[in-house]
Length: 215
Image (cartoon, rainbow, N blue to C red):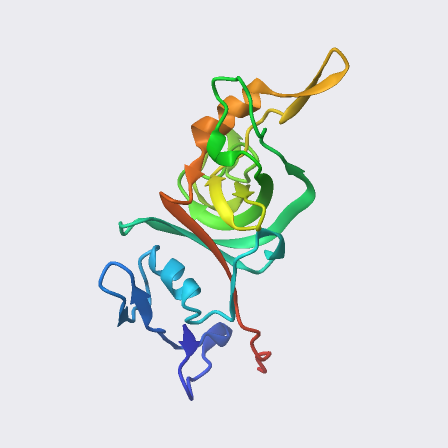
């Protein structure tokens, strides 16, 4: 969305907003403008760079301030997030092959990263989540706005091939007889949480730099 020209500044410097038309992938790409777009529309807007400066296609280029958006392909369901950090210190590496029943060949050769996001959600993003609260001796997700950590898997070209809405509480590797081996508990957790890019598309985009607001 862009500020309407000559929009008056009112209390708290609020600006009237003129909706930016977004291409609708469920309606032959026709343009539609609304102040409250369905969650799947930001994916299309981001990919067509409508209101965005760039489509960030390489996971290692995602940075704080970028927008993450996902949609269940072919449906009106989606979700939008603000990236506030990406853990690139140690990418998690699913095995290239394994005899474990929870081995996911789809992830072979990929690298797993951990974006921290701000969003509004009823389920949050796993245990690493500000919505995980304790009240009256019970701990659970409160829902609403908050910060959480999700998982993203990229192929050798840096393209997203899958994601998890939360992280496994287990380490991806463990030491057995002095040797590092893939942790079967981690594999099972990832298999149960994984959403493939072919089913639910996750994309990232960079917002344009705006001129500072002068009171």
